[in-house]
Amino acid sequence: MVANRIFGRETVREHGKLAAACAEILGGQTTGFDLQLSRAFAWNLLHESRVSEFWAEEWFAEFGKPVTAQSLRDSLTDYLYTFRSRPSDAYSLLEDFANAFVNCFHSGVPQPHELLITTFDLWSPASRAVWQYGITQGIGTLRGLGGLDRAATKLPANIVNALSSRDQDLQMPMMAAYFAAQEAYLDEVDRRRTSGDCMDTFSPVWVTREAEWKKRTSASATGWCESVGVCRPDSCWMAVIAYPARRAGQLIRPTQLEAGWFGRHFPTPLSCSRETGGRIVEGRTAIALRSDHASLPEYIHAPIRLKVDDWRRAGFPVLDTVVPAGPHARLFADREAHWMALQRKFPGLVAWMASPNPPIGIYRL
Image (cartoon, rainbow, N blue to C red; front, side, top):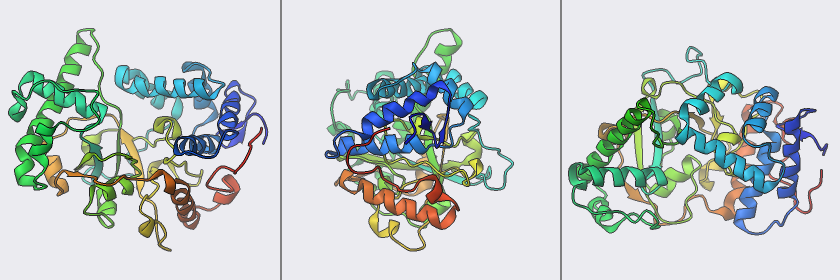
C-alpha cells in the first residue's frame, strides 16, 4: 500500500495523510465489534472514490487536517455537526465542492411523484428533541407529560404505553402530536436563524425508493432496520414514513464522509452513477444471499417537515425491534454478500476493491 493512497487513488495532495489514519485503525486488534466497525470504516475510506480530489482536499482543510485515528473521528464529528448547526454551510460545501447533488432531470433519479421511504428511531437524539419540544409547547397528547430524561436509554413508559397497541389507528393521537411537534420545532429553527440566533436542526434524511423497498419488506421493526442498513444493538421503537420525492427537494448521493464512523455503509464503484445513488448493505442474510439480490439505492436530503399522513401512507404501525438489528457479528458476512451483489451489476468492481473486508492481521502502509 502506497502511503498516499486514499479515496481509491494515489494522491500528492495533503489529504493523502488520511491514509495514515486509516492504516492506524487497520493495524489494530481485530476482535471486538467496535473495532470491526472501525476497520470496515477505514477500509471504506481508502476505497471511497466518490470523493473527488477537489472535495477531499477541501474537506481535509476545512475539518482540521486529521492525521490520526482520533483526529479523524473528531473531524467527522465536526463535519456531521455542521449539518445541524450550520446547515447552509454544510449543504453549500456539498454543492460547491463535492459535486454530490444529483441531476433531477436524469432518468435514473426518483421522479417527483415517486415515493421515498425512510425509517427512524423514536428515541434518537433528534426524536428526543422533538418529544421535549412538544411537551414544552403542550402540543396535542404531549401536553402534561412532564420533562424527559434525555440521557435515558429507552423511550419513556408514558409514550411507549401509547404506542404498544401496534395498531396505527390507536397510535394516531401520539404520532400526530409527534409530527406536529417536529413541524413546530423546525418552524422555531427558521425563526431563530432569521433573527440571527441559532438552534440545531436535524441531520440529513437517508432515503430509498419505496416501491423497491416494499417488494422485500418485513413485518418486523428489526427487518425494517436491517433492510436499510440501520444497526441498533438495543431494543428501540421504529417508525416508517413515505412521501413524494418532490417534497425532499435536492437529493444527494452520500459518501462515507456523510455516513461518518459507520462500517455498515459501503462505497460504490465509479461505474455506479451519481444519479442512481449509493447502495445499501442488506442486513438480512436470507435476502442478501439470494443469487438475484440487488442492493437498494440510497440518497440523502436536508430535513423537511413531515406529517402524520406520511406515516399513515407508509402503512406500518410503530413497532419495537425486540431483538438487535444488524448484529455486529454479521458485519463482515453482510459486507461480503453486498460486494457479491455489486459485482453482478457493476463492471470493474474487483479491480477497484479486491476484497469487501479489511485484511486480517497487521496492516501497514
